[in-house]
Amino acid sequence: MSQPLALEEIRQAPKVLLHDHLDGGLRPETIVDLARETGYDRLPTTDPDALRTWFREASDSGSLERYLETFDHTVGVMQTRESLVRVAAECAEDLAADGVVYAEVRYAPEQHTQTGLSLEEVIEAVIEGFETGSRGRGIKVGTLLTAMRHQARSREIAELAVRYRDVGVAGFDIAGAEAGYPPTRHLDAFEYLQRENSHFTIHAGEAFGLPSIWQAIQWCGADRLGHGVRIIDDITVAGDGQAKLGRLAAYVRDKRIPLEMCPTSNLQTGAATSIAEHPIGLLRALNFRVTVNTDNRLMSGTSLSEEFAKLSEAFGYGWDDLQWFTINAMKSAFLQFDERLALINGVIKPGFARLKWKA
Ligand SMILES: O=c1[nH]cnc2c1ncn2[C@@H]1O[C@H](CO)[C@@H](O)[C@H]1O
Ligand SMILES: [Zn+2]
Image (cartoon, protein in one colour):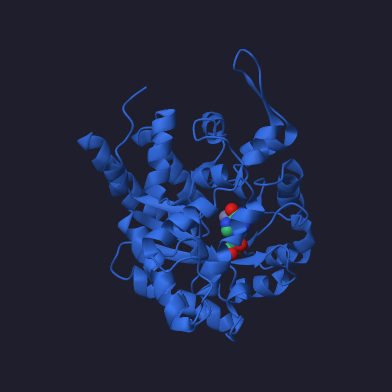
């Protein structure tokens, strides 16, 4: 196995991030500032370093439901226009500093109306923050509007995703606890989006298995799968190493349905046991359209470069593999084809060529 790629070098590579939650990536210092400014008094600690550690440890429970409880604090300080603008701007800055050239960042507008903001005000504040934070930094950021799967506002949020699609919103998603809240609960929202020629991804196959993935694709028509790790349950590997794909796994692979994989997050919620045993290794070897993502940089104490560094160490991935994941992600973006092509040919390929030439 070759030498793992160094983190500092991976940071130089032009990367693409499709699955990152706005309320899962705040800087601890900012949480403390915003709590003070907005009168939020339920933080477990007001020391930024201790807070950073608290989020990571509290997210390590092995259960998605408990993992999601930590979001009370980030969502709690994101209830004003100013805080949303700041969090979005800093998100763009942090991703750009990590070498991300294109990102789709998601959040649930319905969670940010506790002190009276309208859904439109929330969406406009986040778009403004991303514009400010991206300017001059060589990054383009689109947003995905998420509806919470245990709530009943998905149709309304889907309509907003369509209304704002040409001005900063790239698509739609559903998130939250998966068990007990199947994607078909929100079928009307997905059917509406399909009639509107709109794009969406669905968190599926993370805490719940194949039925969730099957519904997301065959009932709801998802363009991409958030996580999708449990597709592994439809693949058997024989003693001689030959893999046999069931009908659903074959469909996902043959239709080139993008999997937004988030390795570290999966270890924390119990969806995988270690990076080395993470299904991403097999799925990449079988040529599924795998992409690498962060999910929640704060809860997982990670960045996209760090996710790649861990994978390089566990699976021996080199520059060609990283470029493959990156081009997969760019091909899967909710962005016009000509813009995707321009980024692949004008930014990603030349960027990786420089790194390969140096190596
Ligand atoms: O990995 C995940 N699986 C399911 N839901 C998630 C995950 N990460 C975050 N959220 C949920 O999405 C909301 C909007 O960003 C967050 O508030 C959190 O509740
Ligand atoms: Zn997620």
